[in-house]
Image 1: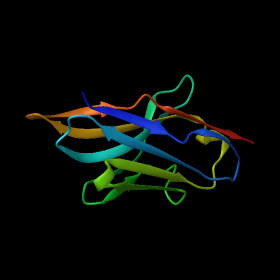
Image 2: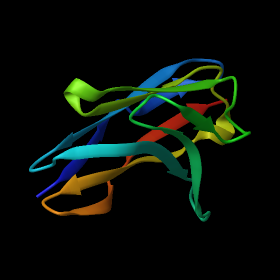
Image 3: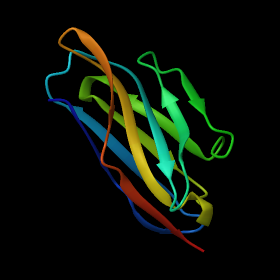
Image 4: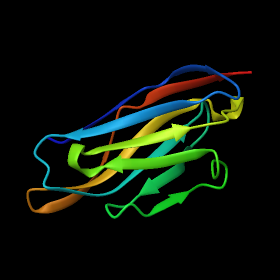
Amino acid sequence: QVQLVESGGGLVQAGGSLTVSCVASGRLDRISTMGWYRQAPGKQRDFIAQITAGHSTNYADSVKGRFTISRDNAKNTTFLQMNSLMAEDTAVYYCNAYIHEGHRWDSYWGQGTQVTVSS
């Protein structure tokens, strides 16, 4: 059973920084793209950033220049460093990964971690 577990969320003041992480565990063979999404109350889940196994990255315009995604392939972990946080960044942040388990690829989601930015 493959699991993604996020951590590092919390309360931070506007202008501050926070780093969330996500670890994949279980009977996984390979991890392809890993990414972060967020969902604010009453809104849809939106894409934030993604990183390939080769460390190519892609960001949503709303976070470009403020957020940085990275990964440690040896530890099956991805990080999202968030700088210059604003109140509108408040949301539940979800990790996503494409993982090869057995003989198939599947998309997996973590349970989410709350990030609250106070203005």
